[in-house]
Length: 168
Image (tube, rainbow, N blue to C red; front, side):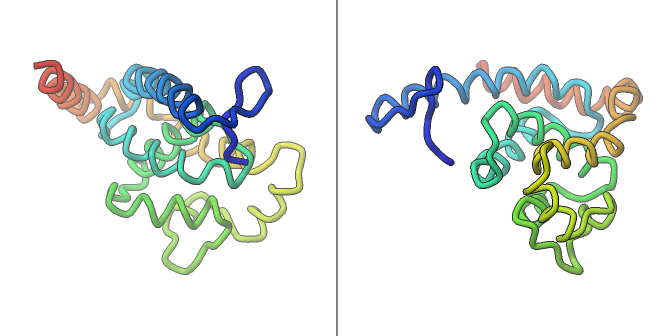
């Protein structure tokens, strides 16, 4: 569902829903900026871009914005691990979330995810999000270590430069 919930109740007023989501999204973005320091080769701006892609589709698999944040960080790490460029992320992530994996779904193939896996996850107790977090964890396990390598430090310096540019 794509309802905006507060204390388990759907907000029906569009204006209140937007105001509520704005604060929630800002919180997620602030959290992404911190967590992305543990990723090598990507900046928080790039992870935020992936977050936007995931957030647009997470409702279709029963997920929240917080789960979209976690998936975005994991997807960004996996894309970096497998050397898949960010411009390809929308197709890669979308095919996995929709369970529409084709021959050119490189990330799904690298993670060993099939259409049957996604269909099965939709009916399992862990759901698609739990299934994906499990699959993605293998690909991003080394990201915290890699973030301390030269390329990781370089991406963190780029990130710092981007943040300074936004501040001034």
